[in-house]
Length: 320
Image (cartoon, rainbow, N blue to C red; front, side, top):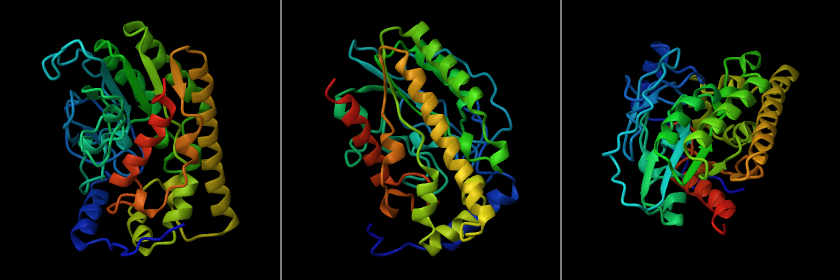
């Protein structure tokens, strides 16, 4: 396992921005997605936020809310002209919006593993040669928010839909506040059903929820990560990151096991749909290093991490 050759430090400006968000109650480490086009900028497992209108590439994150209003499901048909070529929609949370991947506390959909356009990332869309794309992911989303995203996706009648969501369901203030597995599964089943109503023949790619315990194991080696995590990032897993007490280990194990259960639910539901492809735990099992993590929050994927996610997805879909 390689360590960063030149470890970055949390700058005063970055730390101040995070502290300001914490003071406003925005840096919660979990939360609900919101209606596209609302308010002002943070993350899914770092800060609860929502992106812009979600129509096409380039929409930026917007403000946190306590509940997710029902979004407008009518797509902006002028954003990406229909030229008859295949269409692709990305659904999910701040991992897919590219939050903190190319700037501090902002969405960077241009580097998204799914529908990004930056050449160095080589997104799944680029690898598949798909140019008509929409990123409907909403930073801060939990699985309960996926049906609303699915409605927007179905309205576009896409040929391919990608889903990566679930980290926020596990990144709760405490393990006891994590989403119940039965609810997680029911919401995912509902979302798949909605997609099938509008796009019965679309391919559906479902990525596994990342291994949050692996994140803790990697990041805790770096003072920079310990410094930024104290602002409240994913507290169910990352609170007191240096603690090795039985209580701390039990807490982390509980979160890890819940993520495993989420992934089992994703696999089971996907297996019931002939056009659904689960990644067989590829994202969960990926042995990422510090280079794959955002230099600003040590939680979200960096550009290198986004590229790795794209590679994992393409390995599952590229030959089909």
